[in-house]
Image (cartoon, rainbow, N blue to C red; front, side):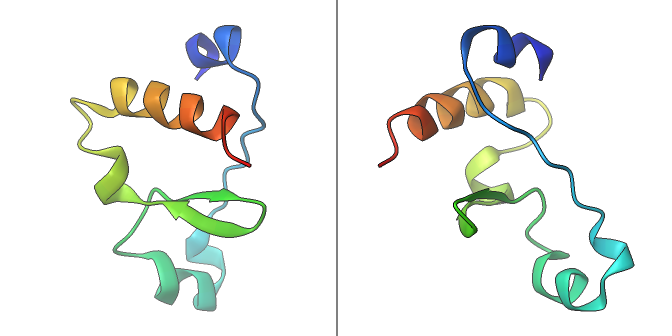
Length: 68
């Protein structure tokens, strides 16, 4: 994430869903989930597998910078 933050401005908040039953029930099959202004915008399917996550995250951050 440090590599991404050099070129793109964003705030990252990591939420531990196992400590909240409602969040766990909602997200356990979808993690990781990215929210923009409190709305689910991207989930595991959009971000991809561990082998392709970095390129997907670069695209996601670029998309978020243009998100209005």
